[in-house]
Image (cartoon, rainbow, N blue to C red; front, top):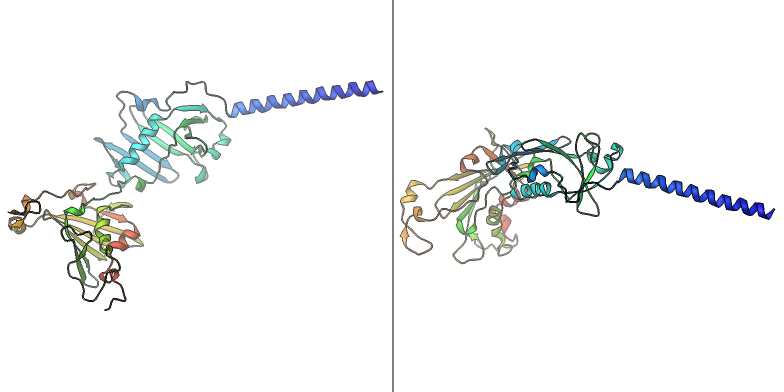
Length: 362
């Protein structure tokens, strides 16, 4: 009896071991199918056409869901086609092209389309499962799909539209399909040293005030300070000149033929005699700015003035032109308007009383 029981126990153990081995083989096979090792060399470029000696990238189209952006290379300057050809953000362009050019194949991943959604590599369906579709206009167009970035390494899941095979490539590659994200953010960059004065006008209340900064002074001040009033803090009037020197854009559009009355008009008098005029309006909870660079009046060109650098008598034509750091030409400004942030709008439309302590007096 005991011999039979022992023999049966041995048989059961052998059977169990065989079953476990079979299960492990099946699991290993499944894992291999899901994540086989790449047969390509580890240094294989994902998009080798970008690195060819005479490669010329003419345009990049980025699509995701209902959003799309077209970036075009015009003589070395990248422009956002569906934002009136406005200059593209240089740093973002360099980052994207460099990431695509340097991306290398790390390994082969799943070829099962059922797994595309979790890797954000579908071309339809829910927004959070969709891939970012990028078309590169080279000598031959190349279309690729970007999925999610890997969580524990500098890598991105990608595939081709006509191929279910997913690859993991080096680098965290991302690209927004919102054209506004590609706009060069600085409309102009006026150095404060080139500004003589800033006048703020409020047409509705007919209030206006002018900011000036004396030689060697740290802070801007009012050209005419109200008696008995004290500024909330000594540098509070620096807000407007500093915003003008670091202006940021949210959107760009054609200037409408008929616009609402400006909430605020700002005139920036430059040391070279020109004036930058800005009109700020609010429409449908969006904040817009139009800009114009006015030339030096003829009478002012001929009028004698003291040169700031050497104290000699001359005229404004002798003063070096102030570099406005414009993203577009002065002529192009006349046809455009620019959306700005609510915080920028609030700062640039403040009335004079906003700068003073309410307990200072009337």
